[in-house]
Length: 146
Image (cartoon, rainbow, N blue to C red; front, side, top):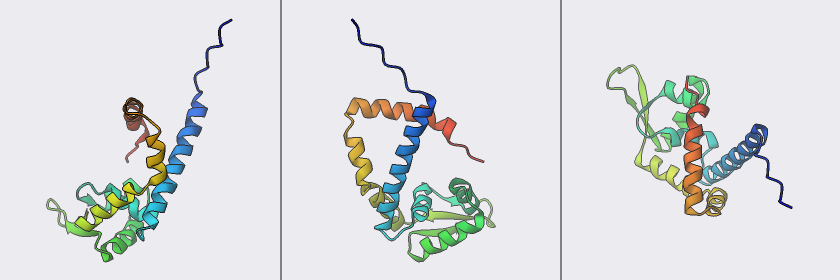
């Protein structure tokens, strides 16, 4: 007698698992950020700064009102983690740029996400490659930018 063929997971099961992993990763990120005196939102903003980003663009990325971004950037700027620069194409627009200290800080936050690193260590190289490919395929449909 042969073993029954396992049923593929339902979308609901996949959604539940993705949500649980996202929540756990966010909690790990927030804890690591807290060890550096950052709120999770401050760290998330810092993580978005791959280059100059307009204040309004940060509001879109953080899914919040532009007035909230001003306070977050004020606090990060006071710590020397970001700076504001006029946009070269439109001097009325202020771009936010991570300082070297800001880039080093977010790098340390990510490096200290022990629960996430431990979970990923459970996968071998082939499994990580497969997971990465699958997540990259899902990413465009999951990222909605206004």
